[in-house]
Image (cartoon, rainbow, N blue to C red; front, side):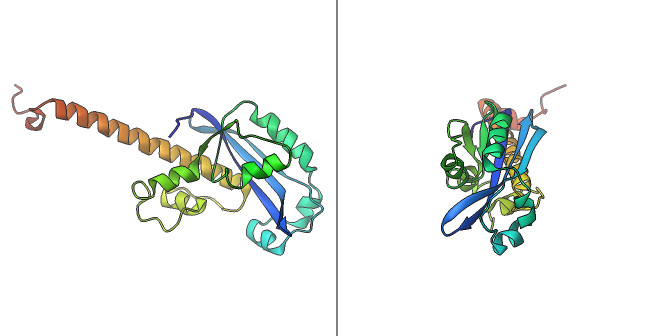
Length: 196
């Protein structure tokens, strides 16, 4: 997995009506040196009626959407927030990135790590016994709490899961180095028996 010191984890919420998805919330958290240093969070106006399912799932109300800035402005502000910082997401290759591109914001060049793909690769090792690979399930399995289906919380959980994967990789690397040192010394198992 690529190790990024500075990155932005992002997530979208959208309302799908008649097979067309409409972005209603754009959120991101910026991490530098393994700590959150900034965040972006905005609802986006949509004239499309909000599905009651979406309201129940996300807590986003029609009133919040009606009072929100237009999507073009939200995406322009989001692009400014990103700058040239690398992006990570959770299964964003399948939904969030294509949806942004459909709305005129192609961020594929910035996208560096899909944390869902990492979770999928780790399901029999770091995530052995996990029930499913939904973001909140992976986060909970790793001891990370948060409220799912709120794009700011999901972006934050994505970043924290990524940080946990970095920590697990670092621990494995350390143990591998220790193993190499031990295996190069045929007397390592004897420990301190021959010291004064």
